[in-house]
Length: 494
Image (cartoon, rainbow, N blue to C red):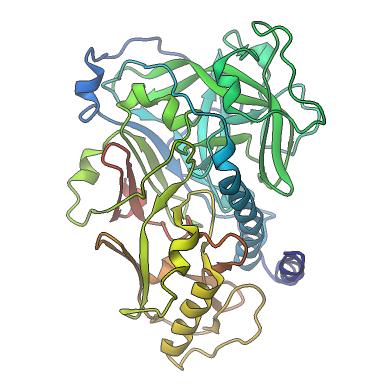
């Protein structure tokens, strides 16, 4: 792993010296400045009495997404994607450890039921390219009065958290950190609360003490990798969401989140993280009663786009009516799962199944993850996929041997329309996911290099469908029918 990171750092330094970026203006919905108060429209809105009857038909909640090209001062695309690969490596190592420990965690408990809304919820999500990140960022309004914070949208984790004052050891973020003292709705979760058992205590020699169960706070520690973690107090707070109807905004009280006082890692200016995993503390799980509880979806604009899109809680009628909407079943979930596992059977390059040992893809499982940038396969599978592309690529594009980290890479300087072999994933239930070339090949400019956006996972054996491969697909997490839906769409128009 150390040698892998050294290669990345060396290449980043080489590319950054020859790359440049231009400033861009965000498109989509306009929002107040960071940490600016937002008016609360109160609790009007149409409530539905029968939550179970509406679970399938309640109109969805929509969080708007925008995507900006790199801000002034950022490095070029080569350095950006290689930096993303470095962060992915740390993240995958964390996933491996979390899977190994999942069997020993505390039993998960669901949050209390809420009454479903008939309106849709709207907020902003944008690509992290503007702050040098390969993740997608969502605007979330926290506290009373509500203040806007930009958080990383992550289907591979559960805990929602923001950096909090007093910030004892924090990374740099855009705008002020959240101040609990400035919010009238903030309150700590006590150590005697059942929800405290859903988080790990800080790493200390002594176990977490709880002398006064009704008053002592619940300290937590949540790790993402060797250099990424958050430590603070588990708390409850009001989250304000925008509605698509005439009701304006709606306040959701008592959302559990981490108030992080010590936070380290590669979070690229975000205020924190919005977890959308399967666990009971995730944002999707806690708002289940608000949006009907059975589905959410997102549509990710391409990296570098200045357009906007949405993450949607609840079923979206336009997506359900899409003529090219396909489904594949999730793998059966356990009580401790955070990740969304798929049942990947084979990988096809140029319409032919790649010769991958039968047990390789099944050993570590396959997940879909919005927080990982590139896509990953176990090393034996990755080597076979890489060779399949090398064997089928046109000789018009010279192969660049020995290019660090990404492989294969080709010299495409001066080339117009580039033709590459098709890539698709075949699942155990017969579904197939076909991708356009721009979702699995990266153009590194101004170097004139094109590289396969796939890498190997030598340690975990886990396959990961990252966000780069999901660009311009509307991806549906249907938790009622335990399936993943995907349809090609121009996400800027969603």
